[in-house]
Amino acid sequence: MAQRTSTERVLTTHVGSLPRPESVLAPMVAKARGEAYDAAALEAALDQGVLDLVKRQVEIGIDWVSDGELSKPSYATYVTERLSGFGGNSKGFAAADLREFPDYARHLVAIGGVVPRGGGACCQGPVAVKDRAPLEADLARLNKAAAAAMPTGAFMNSASPGVVAVFQANEHYPSEEAYVEAVAEALREEYEAIVAAGFDLQIDAPDLAMSRHFTYAKLDDTAFLKIVARNVEALNHATRNIAPEKLRMHVCWGNYQGPHHRDIPLETVLPEIARARPSVFLIEGANPRHAHEWAVFERMPLAQDKILAPGVIDSTSNFIEHPELIAQRIEAYARVVGRERVVASTDCGFATFNTTPTVFPDITWRKLEALVAGAAIASKRT
Image 1 (tube, rainbow, N blue to C red):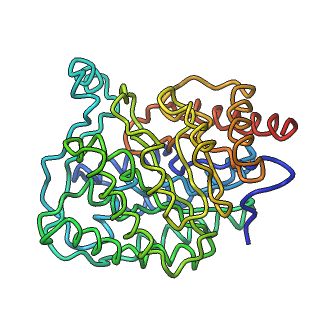
Image 2 (image 1 turned 135 degrees about the horizontal axis):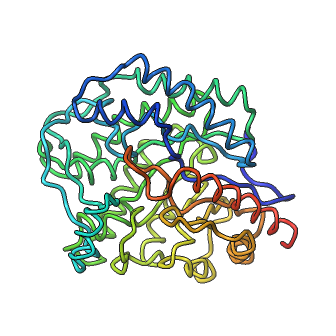
């Protein structure tokens, strides 16, 4: 079993997505646009890309590595390639925080920045497994890369049932509840296959926080918490055959450079989120809107069987955090939940979509080096 925490030092990980090399990015973008591309060349680039990424993570000192989500156009929309029932084009949504600053939102669009607005395919028929080949290819690549690099542990990302419903609107099922249940059952096969291949499964569940100011901006907090409870129940049911210690869950408020003043506080959603089965809880903790929330765990203690993997470096800023600052952030969480239950992580992924990332690739790797250095400092002081 992979080492998930340590009494000797602070382990390190990240949320999942990493910069895609141009050899992968160019054909992926062409494919998404319906343009001609070389499928064999893309597969070969993915094979080599995952080998290189895993090796680099281990060389830097990241303990818990991933395949960088290299093959996926994004963490939530990739399911339309693997599951049936999706098509058409939904009208999408606009984040409530950016709606208050339309000039800034237009500026982001003009400079090619990440602007969360939904859209894309929607659910137009029964959701079921359509094609296992992409998943099997991902598993084979990560298996080969992990065998070569020998990391402390390896994980693979998969979308939560709730986030699929956020980005692919329902036009088929009689209710959103029925839709989420169907997606959960369809994804169960992917969830179980990842764990059966020897990896930890990370459920990406920004629907449990981010969707408050996205699709559910018109609801009050009480009504939104009912959505969170429903989505947690669906997630728990879909992972019922997987041991909690093989599960990680990432919750965030959206990986974009917005004002984020409409983010629902962690303290409001934590009681519902804490009911989820995964043993490792990854949250934002470095950006200016959520860096203070380590103190929430003083008032609302983390269950003894849970591990906290807070973000201690930001995933939308090209600042390279000083290792001393990273250490201080780690120490704040360690004082509250215990050093042995803290794993140093990132706020979110560094390549959420297969477009130009907010953080430039070379800077991403330097930030991860700083993460490892900061964890080493914290290990000596806690």
